[in-house]
Image (cartoon, rainbow, N blue to C red; front, side):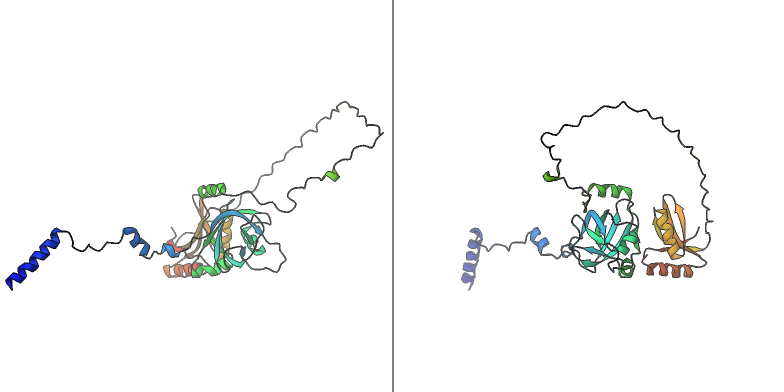
Length: 293
């Protein structure tokens, strides 16, 4: 038995000296592990983000809703529109997927164009696909989901990406055809002689007197102090801030270059929380309760 064990040991030692041991299993490469691991970003499609021109549909077509028509985004999705001239940013719902005029990104419904304060001409804007929160989608469908105005630094960068404005019907006059060119005079016709007339001297009229009418200063509303307030938004456009404050039954308060839209004041924190809940129901989920110092 001892001699049999020695023979087995000798065979194992011989195998070690000749390097005949089975190779170790190969470890997977780091790249293959990364490729096999699930990634959240791989499941998310790239969001639509383009700079171009938008047009408005002609009124009278029976469209009374606030929506946009886009050639590729599905109906029911949402887009954030930033006007490159003012920086005003609003979220709208894509109600239709359909063709738009050549050179345009989308078409605004007549009511949507009125909500943005634009006419029927081409409007430069940034169109970005977004997914608002559930409590904000109702406000987006009504055209009242406003975002903070885009800063001038961002607007300057976006304007550099703006393509040339689309040319509509009748924007350029067609060239005259060969048949419309002036025909040569008939044979034997006498040429018309031109006579140079001396220049006439016209005495200029005296300038009309300019009357400066002083503009009365607008009354300044007293600042509301004390208690608690709900800050709904902070906008750079005074007109938009006052319109929003009027719609919410609040007031405006300037802080540097921004105009704060607030509601209140409230005598208690509980009352202010109720005011914040009303603002959130209107689509302003970022509203917060502050002490009215």
